[in-house]
Image 1: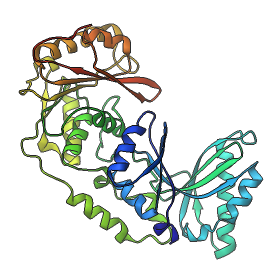
Image 2: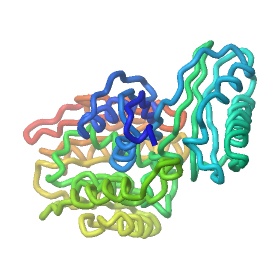
Image 3: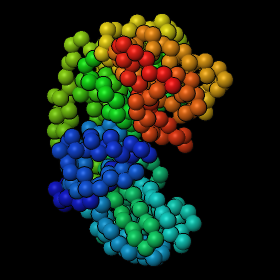
Amino acid sequence: MWYFNNSSRVFITCNKRISPYLKLEVEGLGFEVTDTRPSGVWLNATMKDCIKLNLNLRCASQVSYSIKEFTCNGPEDLYKIARQIAWEKIIPEDGYFSVTSNVFHPSITSPMFANVKVKDAIVDRIREKTGKRPDTGSLLNQTSLYLFWKDDKAELFIDSSGETLAKHGYRKIPGKAPMLEALASATLIATKWDRKSPFLNPMCGSSTVAIEAAMIATNRVPGLYRNNYGFMHLVGYEESMFESEKKIIVEKIKEVPGLVIHASDISDDAIYVSKVNAAIAGVEKYIQFTVSDFEQSEVPPAPGVIFFNPEYGERLGDETELEATYSRIGDFMKKKCRGYTGYVFTGNLELSKKIGLKPSRRIEFYTDKIDCRLLEYELYQGSRREV
């Protein structure tokens, strides 16, 4: 079908504050980013390009292909214009589709109402043209469509991803308060890790950071762990389109002899979960798991990177007790990690002061509704930089 070979506006969404790292990924795949927003990046691409993007991107949430921009002043305009689109050439007549939206218009009090208007227009159009009608619902496991409508400007997209790309598919057991995989990838891209020197992840929890580090170092991309996307349920889709891109990402996997990634936690359960998830991701041989307090961690010779993602009192842990933990993290990095670059990801800047070191960078991130920072510390061999 036309959209597999014709370029259109494509918007790739991501979580808040991740778009700079998403932009680096998209450009690394050979695409030109035309605009960067807090919630994602714009480019021009075909639906075939969207297949490549879906399989390769670590920081993305959805890859959406624009099919219609229009002026819209109310729900009747929305229905009328949506019904004019040749949906019978996009959605299989006996298929299934869902509609999601972000709507900012005074005539709409609930996005669900706008979604229903689009669904009605699509069903009526396909029934008129084919005598049949597809099923509809809220699941994102088949054809997915997205509406963005603000003031009098509206745009309809094919969501080529369906289920979010931010979850990478290997984490079958999440553990307690896990970091989102896309966020973990973005924080790693933001570090100075060279992807071959030692990488330490004490207090690893379910080891999302350590696993993503091993995946990045060995060129394993999220598309390796997933076999269903929105683009697979469009009229004109051919399995060979997906298989050719899947073959490329498999061939790009590389071995990294001598790669050292250490992940440790005081919880036996956390390490068990970590090992299961690492095995599913195919990177278990690159990660050395240890049940221990982080102060007992063996630190390989510098240079290297040490990455902490401690609790910060919003969801887990008591803040008073965590003050001592943050202080211990600082002492550990000062005494045992000289020559390393240290990172602490936290949503509690008051607690971070207890680390007792001056960050060389404070990199902004966001998780759930929490303003976070990735704090970078240059742990010089010969001196200490304390606050």
